Length: 296
Image (cartoon, rainbow, N blue to C red; front, side, top):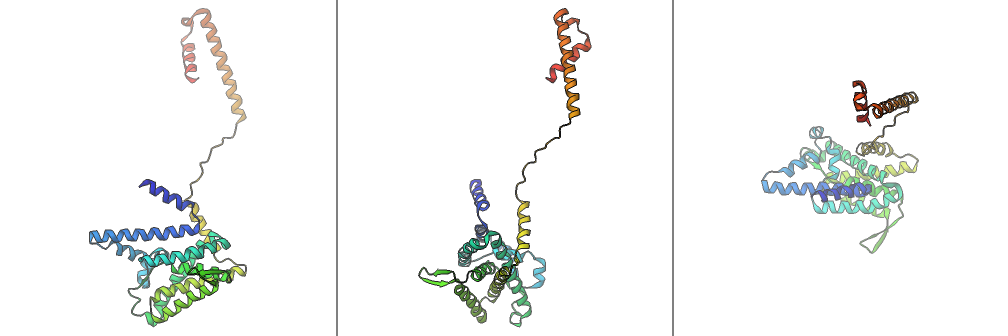
């Protein structure tokens, strides 16, 4: 078990920003699956408690008691197909994103896009009459808002880049992004998972604005990226500081003088022993010789 844990830890540490996002999403999903199994065995809804404390509620009174859910919801999935398609989109769009703008901006775009999508979801459910009845018990979960931020950002940055759909049809990246947005608008109009599609649109809006501001010379993710760098530095092992002592020349001189004096005194005692024997030494001389021998 320790070996598996070490392998996972090594893979996470050595992976780039894209792979770390994928690992986190998969890790949270596995935790949820295990809790669901335990819940079935114990007939106690541990998994539901986990969802309740990590999904993003639309009800403001609940959100106040769970502010961290604005962050945790974007890594939470309950269905296999839900996480599968989110991570596929994240992987393919994320690779393109990293080639052009790096992993540091990818991480910030994903998280800030997720926050924008979550904020738009909560605001919409509390101001539009359409959600008057749903706002009490609704919540949101999934990486879709963050993924949409990455997809729309890279499509805005390199709109004419060609990608293959279904391994045969080649289309420009902006067309794919436009189709995804159109699907969100259609499903939102039909009332099919409106909270999720609103969050997608919030993430997409952030991704678009990020690139437009970047092209104008302003990186709106830089402050957040620096914040994340500082957090990451807290967990990096600090190198051991080797103490370097300044050399005191005066103490060196005294030390060598004392050493020479003691050595001379030992030589005199040994000379006395050779001439008159050990018993001729005084108690003071015997004590000094004993102490000098222990110090060497």
